[in-house]
Image (cartoon, rainbow, N blue to C red; front, top):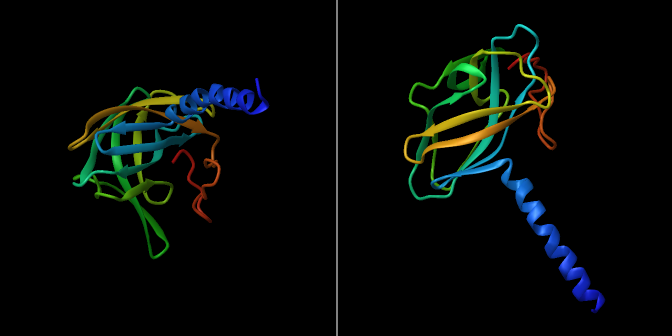
Length: 168
C-alpha cells in the first residue's frame, strides 16, 4: 500500500471518534441546534444553579424556549439578567426566549440563562446535569450540561468582568 492510502485509511478511522465527541455536546430539535450546554459547580448549601448554551435556529420561522425540567432540581426556569445603573437584575421570561430564524441566541453569564431552582444536591466540577428543554414548536429535547469549576467558563468564553456569581 502506498503511504497516501495508509494515511487516508488512518484518517478515516479517526473520523467517527470526532463525530462522537461533537455529538456528546450538541443536540438537535427540529430546526434548532443546541450547542455546548454547561453549568458551574455550586457551593455547599446553594439552592440554585444556572445553565448556559447556544441555540441556533436554522429554520424559516421563530421558535421559543418555553420551559424545561431537570433531574438536578425541582424547578427549571428561563431567565434574563440585565444590569441597570450598576445593579444586576434577574427575572424569569414568562413568555420564554425567542430564537428567530437564522439567528443564534447565546445563554451566558450576565445575559439569558436557565435556572435550576431547588437543587437536590450541590453541583460539582465534572458532574453532568440531565435536562429536558421544551420548545414551543420543536418540542422536547434531552440535553446534558457539563459542570465546570466555580467561576470557570468553557475554553474561549469570557465570564462577566467584575462580577462574582457564586452558584449562578
